Image 1 (cartoon, one colour):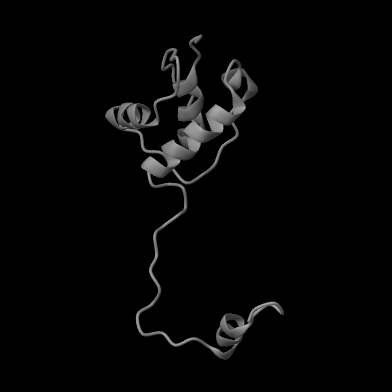
Image 2: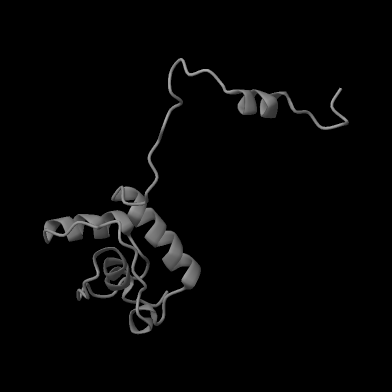
Length: 106
């Protein structure tokens, strides 16, 4: 597998900075996150478009998957685990939806 600037592109996506991070055979989101933190950088919530020159030679699906994993590891993916509020009663519209059954339901 040919090496490419995976980490440079990913770092740009989460920091907006064009860092020279060398070439990698494949992306390593956990390793990149450690490298960014060692440099005093934290990924942020602001999504950025990776310039075409940084995406050259990178597979789009693999890049998207690596970016998703990097954002998840850094906890900047906007997704927070939530539990239902304890003791909350369902409203009438919610009860109707739960009671609704398709015609073939017997």
